[in-house]
Image (cartoon, rainbow, N blue to C red; front, top):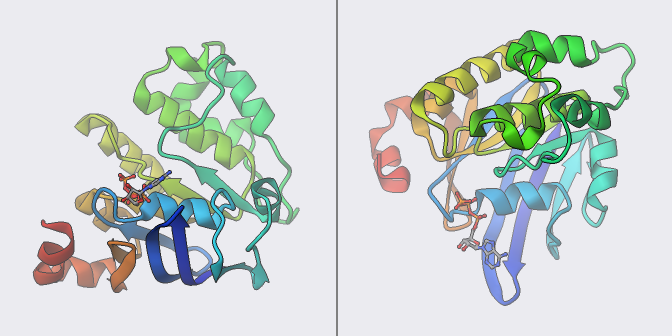
Length: 234
Ligand code: ATP
């Protein structure tokens, strides 16, 4: 579904990604796992057209996305949930969901609408009239995911969904994302949290200093202590 090849990305004269490649197949949950500053956000932003890159290619369903503005990349079927949960803070929860609504491209597939979103996140139904900025950090993150679902994307990019959340909320987030995975959603997420990733993802790419150092099933990563120590210090 997604094929990133030989991606080189710089901020001005400072190069951050050095020939990064990864693939995501339909129905998979794939994690890009790495420490602070490894290049995870840069990778996701490059895929979404939020950062320009001169070298490399990003193909989605066989079509090149390089050079497309990010709103057109969204229309091709990619959804993005940034780390800082970019929701409309001055709008209510209901309004946030309404403005994100988009019909699925493939009319055969079961669309995400409010009713389906509330099955996954019942708390959002209780908070419908509340302004988004009055929600807790965890609720705002869930609203951001719900907004991405309302957009009926084929592939969701999730930047560090567990980051900055209290342990109890991280556990709730894991349950929600596992439910999403059972529904067949294809997800590429970035994470620093190894346990969260091991429980959620099918496959993992370990990123360090802008390069993929190791690629395996999460099962193999669980059993590979040396790799975990080398690149994640865990
Ligand atoms: P984090 O968990 O901290 O977000 P990350 O793995 O997502 O880490 P990136 O945010 O992609 O890492 O950052 C990769 C490198 O690029 C870091 O060294 C960071 O300092 C640098 N960087 C990120 N954004 C910019 C920017 N706008 N200008 C210059 N350098 C940047």
